[in-house]
Length: 99
Image (cartoon, rainbow, N blue to C red):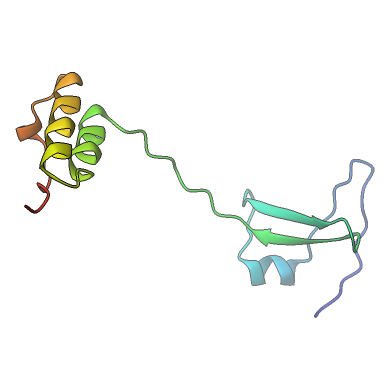
């Protein structure tokens, strides 16, 4: 474990040493996670990755609904749910459950 002495500013700001930033791949504007351990009164900094959330369209929801069917009865219910979305189930790429 490598130890560095840092100074904490009046607003709690401190600089992560360059060698550590480079090792973590942190650049200006990078996201990081600060984990604090209450028992040991210590913390560690981890590189964070932000993944964009997918906003599902009605067509994508219909695909999920149809592909989730497990049998013929479930498939018919799924088709009806998709129709309630105003979508023709036959226009959605999906796999019908095996018989």
